[in-house]
Structure formats: structure tokens, C-alpha cells
Image 1 (cartoon, one colour):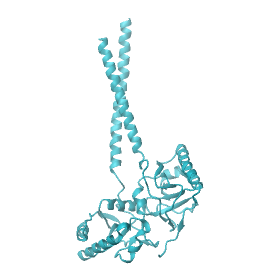
Image 2: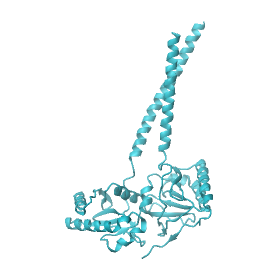
Image 3: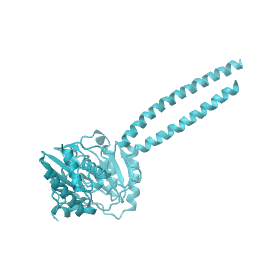
Image 4: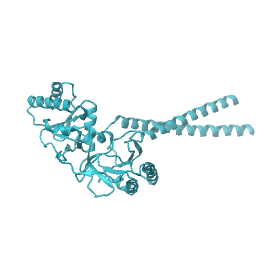
Amino acid sequence: MRRDDDAHGALVEVACVAVLLVAFARLLVFDLAQWREYQKVERRTSREAVSGSLAGVDAEGRVQQPPPSGYTLIFALHAQRLKADVAFWNAVVGRIDQSTEYPMHYVAVCDSGLACRDAESTARFPVVSFMDPLEMQAVAKADGENEVLLYRRELLKGRPRTSTEPLGTARAVVKALE
Amino acid sequence: MRTTLTKVRLIILVALSIACCCEMAVFALLRRGAEVYKSGTALAVPQGISVSGMFLEPRAAACFVIRVTADGCPYCKQDSAHYERIAQEAHSRGCVVVAVAPEAGQMKATGSSLAVELEYVDMKLGRALDTSLTPQTLLIGPSGVVLWQRQGAMNGDDERNAISAVSHVGMAHTDTETAPTLRVLGPK
């Protein structure tokens, strides 16, 4: 009688443990799926602004909107090396305009709000201080990766890489136009 | 026979304990990952152009409440009462409340006296702010450090936690002037 009770108890115990193990296995599958989702979110550093408002506001409060036709190149200006950056991008803009017949528009985005105000007199392109958050995030991300944003109308066409020389940067932009 | 059964039990118990630990670790990791900004992350002191075209100057404040929202966002409407109470509390304690939409044109001017509705932001804030989720409610300390955050619609507990966090920073900076500095930008 006692042996029967022991056997019965052991069976119940094994059944309970089996149920627990199945539950844990199910949870493990769920965890792995969640983990994969989490990794996907972690890899996505920001939403890509593949289209959107390219309007910006300059240091005098004027809204600068690139014309809807042609191409628009958006790049960052760094307040800490403003003169060098303006000279660099003036040279890049000159080279691009010589190398392509596409109508090109340029927008420089200051990395420190109003701090690039002095560049407006010498730059061959409009300088904006503020953009909408999504576009600003895309510009900042591209800048961090040594890239610029090239839009055709309002759609992102490419992210050409910048180089230390204006000629190399202009070539990369012209190549992205093709 | 009995010894074998005991060993099997022991192995199963150990396996279950290890599985429990793994489960807790995974939940802890997922919970940490639910926050977009890592604790102690330095965001930027907000500056930009409001929906009505005024320039919000960057300035010292007891704290900043940043609300990422949009007119067409249903969850933003769902927790708007909680947000308004947090904004009211923050405003009364010398904090600057800023509402920002991911894209220009996604937020109409409400004429709110509590919050500055920013349409355009500078690069520092643009770089730091992840606008892919709405609503988001962030409490930023005077130096730009994230003190409290909630992604998604808030509930009563979130409101209490946010107000408690606001009261801590607000009490330490009661001497700060309360109104955000807005001005019209013009030629230098």
C-alpha cells in the first residue's frame, strides 16, 4: 500500500515537473523572440528621414525652404571650426556646380544653434540653425558618420561620404547624383 | 531506485533554478531596454523655434519637461490629463515645459501658457532626441541629464513618479525664474 502511494506521489511529482519544464520551454521561446526584437530596436539608431520637410530656420528667424525641383544637399557646419568649414564647403559647392548640369540646392545646418551666424556673409549656401527634429536627427547622424544627405525633391537619394579634400567630397556627391 | 529518483529530482531542481535565473536576467535586460535614454544620459537644454515663430533661448532652469507628441497621436490624447498635471507642477516649480512634434506641421499652436510648442530644434537637441516614439515624457535636470522618462502613454503611477521627481529638483532650485525666454529672431 505504502509502495503504491510512493509510486503515485512520484508520478504526480514527475507530471508537475514536466508541466513546469514545458512552461519554461515556452517562456524560453518567447524570450528568444523578444530578444531578437530588442536587438532589432537597438540596431535601429534612428528613423531614416527618407522624405519629409527640408525647411529650416536661419539665425534671423527666416524659414529657408529649398525649391521643390532639383537636388538638395544638406550638410553640417561646425561652429568650432566655422571658417574652415565654410571655406571647405564653398569649394565643394563650386566643384559640384562645375561638374553637373542638375539644378542643385545646398543647405548647411549649424551644429550649435545661432553660433554660425557669422558664416552667412561668406557662405555660398544658406545656413540654417534649426530644423524639425526628425530631419535634424538625420543630419546629425549623417554628420557623425562623415556623410551628407542628398535629396531629390524631398526624397532621400543618397548619403555620399565626405573626405578631407573638397574635390573628393564633390566627386562623391556627383557620383551619387548619377 | 530511490537514490536514482533523488538524483533526478536534484538535477531537475537545479535545472529549474537555472531556468528561473535566466528568465529573471532576460526580463531585467528587456526592462532596461524599454527605456530609450540610458539613465544619466545628458540630453541638451532645449532651444528652437516655436510653432508661433518665436525663438526659445537656451537658459538655466530648475528642470525641463520635454513632451514628444503629435496632433494625430491617439496615445498622446489618452494620457494628456496626466501630462498636463505634470506640466502644471513643473511650471510652478520653475521648470521649463517644452512640447515637440517629430516633424514640422504635426502640432498646431494651442496657445498654452504652460508649454512652449517647438516646431524646429537645434542640432544638439535633434541629435539627442529620439522622436520615433510618441508620446514620450522626459524630465531633464538643469545640466541636461535625464532624470525621469516614460515612453508611451502614462498612467497614474507614472504621474506620481514624475511629480515626485519634479518636486525634488524643483525644491533645490526655487530661486530660478519660471518663465521661458521667448523672443523674435531678427538681423544681428
